[in-house]
Image (cartoon, rainbow, N blue to C red; front, side, top):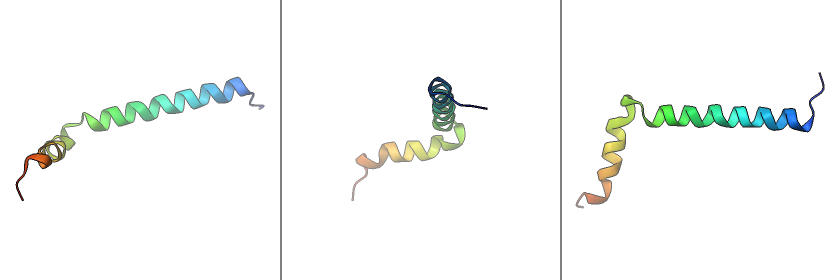
Amino acid sequence: MELDTNTLRSLATVVSFVTFMGIVAWAWSRRNARDFEEAANLPFEQD
């Protein structure tokens, strides 16, 4: 099997898209919502 430039570019695009969708799924997961809410309120906490 010989990989030419276009095949490698296509493979890189697919891998990048799958990685992006994984990050989106992680960011929108309910399991992480509480951690993100705490992080969003950090600038407003008093020392």
